Amino acid sequence: MRKIIVLSGATASGKSRASLHLCEIFPDTFEIVSADSIQIYRYLDIGSSKPEKSDLQKVKHHLIDIVDPSYPYKASDFVSDALSASEDIFSRGKIPLFVGGSGMYLEAFFEGLSVTPEASSLIIQQIQNEGNLMGWDSMHEQLMEIDPDAAKKIHSNDWQRITRALSVFRASGRRISEYWGKRTPKISGDFLFIRLEAERDKLYDAINRRVDEMVEKGFVDEVVKLLSMGYDEKSPSMNSIGYSQIIKYLKGELSLDYAVEMIKHDTRRYAKKQIIWMRRKDYYLPFDFRDYCGISEKVSEFIK
Image (cartoon, rainbow, N blue to C red):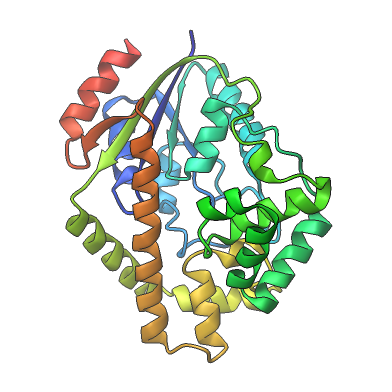
């Protein structure tokens, strides 16, 4: 049976470092499949904390820089692309090493894809335009009227899931909550799921440092360049944490200091959501983010 390893954890928990360490001590064994919802986009480099070019040259990575920032990439796209990447890796006699913290993508790939109907790109764009114009709190209130069960489980700041829920209703006339629990057949194989854990204060410190480093590396200039290329807050990728706040700074709505603090705050909140999601998945084995020895031993047992 073909093997796949998943290395997940909250943002800034050290997933990339741990994955590269595994590739070093098990040479010619793995190729990395990114499970990051922002690293898929071209040009969004600093804000998505993409691997350094030197690391990309050391180990082959998949699903990084694969779509235009304007493309509304979905979980179904990830399942298709990840399957193709995995088959490509298997063809070379290697093991796919999934690395990332996008729970929706990982769940879709390993547990099966939701059978929820897809809405057209026009409907999705209309909803995103409305959200940008009226605010996502207003769109969340709209969802509460249509589908209270869904609205109670979706945070008012989670624009992607709000968009998804509203688009399903507008396209099919049915509530998205009616489809929950219904999935396509899941992928088969022998899997090892690893979850990196860190004390909250250490994780939050790492997040804060990462954001400061992003700004130092030229994050603002990156956003300016993206805007000059025609990608604005209406582009799906530019609604993500970091990019949306810097756009507000560039429009004069926030000071740079406040925008940076908002990025840190929203990233910490996102990390908390990631942790809650992963702890619900009892098939993930928890490891301290510094326990490279323990992780390596477990991986060694698995790949024998």
